[in-house]
Amino acid sequence: MGDQKRVIGYWISEKKRQKFNWTEFEDVCAKEGFLLKMINIETSLESQGPIHVFFHKLTDILSHAEDGNKHAKIIVKRVQDYIRKHPELIVIDPLENVRNLRNRHRSYEMIHNGLKYDDDVFIPNFVEINSNCLPEIMDSFRENGIKFPCVCKPLIAQGSSDAHKMMVVFNEQGFSDIQPPCVAQNLINHNAILYKIFIVDDKYHIVERPSLKNFYPKDCELMNTIFFNSHDISKSGSNSKWSVISAEEHDLAAKPKFQVFEKIVERIEKIFGLLLVGVDVVIENHTERYAIIDVNAFPGYDGWPDFFDHLVNSIKRLLKNKKTINYSKCPTFKKCLSDDLDSGFESDKRKKQSTL
Image (cartoon, rainbow, N blue to C red; front, side, top):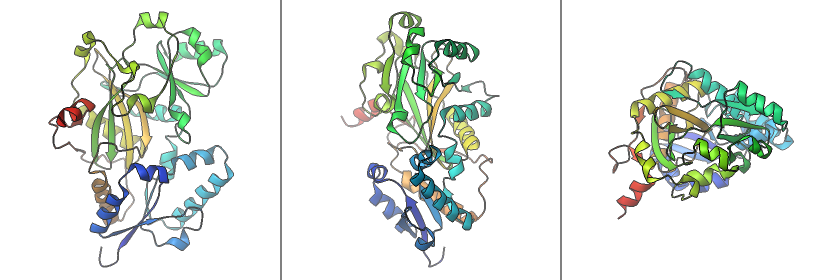
């Protein structure tokens, strides 16, 4: 790169930065010859240049702009204008690609179309609900193969903490609880185990998290709608009563296969064209098929100690190539294993054992 330091301009909210060890990121950048510079998106980006890489988490602002917020629209236009004037700029990630994950129904359709010919990976049946009319909801369920129990999620996945407020609907009586616009999706029994795949370019890391317990036909007769926050259910160390399975159910858990996770990583990067992306996956009881239940732009990367190293290495590669990235070419993916875990998974249980 010569004597001139390359500038990584970034905009990430203060809340997001606090979740990361930002000092570590600065140290990694400095060691690799980069200058890390916070960009003020409230003023001209041109006056803050030159910028060689623009690294951002603008998901909420993009979502607010889509909703018509004038201030957000001004910011997005300012950023887009700068990107257009500087085609050599590397943007992580392209704004138009990030937008594809705002609307859950749209992103689920993209996943469905991208998995058409896969037998062992799928997305559970889903339908968009835009009405409180019970006959319309019933018709939509029948036409799209939605069965009870199902999970209802807000249609918009970005821009508000409400995006994580979900519900499990067990029967037609629960239709009155549905809050459109939303997406209803079949609930796949998966022994309360969620696999979060964190992706950075050609690397990925998997962590195991708690998830919803198994539900059965008898539950659909007896239970009322369950309201939950997906972040609370699936955060590390969560002990929600909705994640507790019986002793008899423990044997239903399937042993994860890395080759299937690798396939999922390839498919998701090809479908969405994102360098930084997270995928939520569950393994269906009995069939052992892998269900993709959500995808997120620039996830939290909790439990991946080498995240910044992989990010900077990817930036170095992109700068070296100095050409348009063709995300449709599937790279050789490499799983990143925790040093103390033979399986490559970092489960809550094993972390506890390692500290004993």
